Structures are given as structure tokens and as C-alpha cells.
Length: 249
Image 1: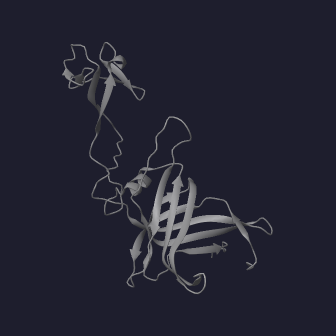
Image 2: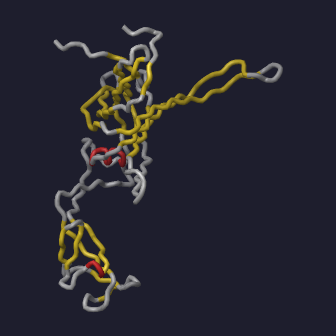
């Protein structure tokens, strides 16, 4: 049994699960089907802030009474890896059924400098040899279209692709709202044993700010997802649960 004097240290990142939100007949936000599981997070941060105003008076005008209001809870998740589903959630690229929006395009454009094209009209893209199609467009150094039989600097053409996954980022769509849980553990000071904790957020809105960093040097890119916790019908924005597993059956 936990002691009120027990003290804990938290170091491990949480494993976080996103669920669809199901609203019951009382207007409560409840957990639906899981839509995303994150087990490669580098950072999982929960920050609670509030505004306050004080009554002041007397000599020196000190604060006499303080009122808190406007509580906000934000969650920051920084992932070492990404998936098509996590990227779609970050960009709001999901259809009404919660599935990743996949475009119909099966081809992409590539532009290749003349130095990378062989005399028999072939080039290498991503390790595969590709023949420049007859429909390709050739350009000189100034960007003017020229004939392939003349001196040219660049060629642009369509490349056929397969197993295509297209995440469409639209000006009309934004990230959604989810039921969130996060599991981690804390180490008890007294005996060094780990105990399990879960945070539960019934209603969290994924914000629209997304930054993808691609650089030649330094550490690999991470993928950050920011969430703003909303107030559910019962007013309980978040729960922290310390637990031990009981035997089934």
C-alpha cells in the first residue's frame, strides 16, 4: 500500500496512445477505438499553467488575496520516428472515418542535370536505372526550354512509382481532437522499485504547428506533436493514476 510519505523520481518517457472520442448520452467524452500508438518517444512533457489576479492594499501595496483562473494544460510529444498515420494526424490529413488521406497520384516529377544522364539517355534515381522518356522537357542554364538534340543543362520528366502513400495537406483541414493515455513508471526513493503510472486526458486537441527539420549534420530529425487539453463535460481535464496489475480472472 502506498504511503503518503513515499517519494518518487520520474525519468522514463511515456508510451502514448491516441483514441477516437466517443460521446455518450450524457455528453461525456469516452474512449473509442485506438488510432495511434507511440512507443518511440524521446520526450513527453505535460505543462500546466494558469493566470492569476491579486487584491493589493496597505503599506507597500502587498498582495492580500490571489485568485487563479484560466488553467491550461499542454502536452508536447517528441518522437524519434514517424509513420504515415502519425504524420497524417500532425497535418490533419485524415478523412471523416479517421483514415489517412491517400491521394490518387501514381507519378512524380524529377529534374536531373545533364552530367547525370548517359549518352544512351539513362540516369540513376534512388539506386535504380531509369530511361529518360520521350515526353521529357529539356532546359538550358537560363531555364529556357530547348530541344534534346541541342546543348541542354537539365531535364524534367515523370517517374512512374509504386506502393505510393500520399499525405495531402489541405488549407481546409486541421488536426483533430483525441482521447489520450500515456504510460510510464516512477522509481520509489525508499527501495528503488518502479511503480506504474498512467495519465488520462479525455479531450486533447492536436495543434496545427508542425516543423520538419532536414539537415545534413547533427542529430537525426525528431517529430514534435503539440496538444492542448480541452475541458470535458465533467471538468476533469486530466487524471494521473498510480497502479499495480491485478491477477486476471
